Length: 115
Image 1 (cartoon, rainbow, N blue to C red):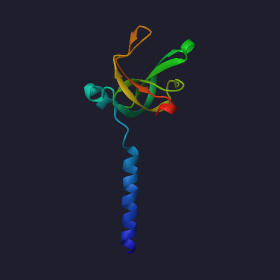
Image 2: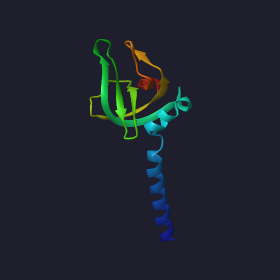
Image 3: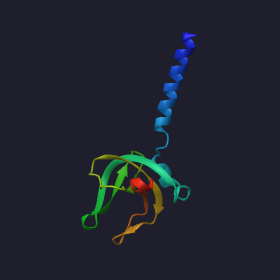
């Protein structure tokens, strides 16, 4: 009986670890299949490598890198600092223009009350 309890606990832990990693996507998957993810909600994590901010409008976006590729993201709150690791859950948009600059593909995070 004890052997089954230990097996059940180990399997449960393995499933929890596997599920914790689910949901986050690799950026290269999104970039390689833009039509599949356009206007769909995704979750990504990555290190901020570039920032484009318009402080007078309290707006900004940043480019993140997860090791598989880079993508622009628009956080719902503050724009993070370069080098910071962030987690974003938002909608993939293609062909976003801000201040006469085209950012191609971007993930736009909704505000907390809209999530």
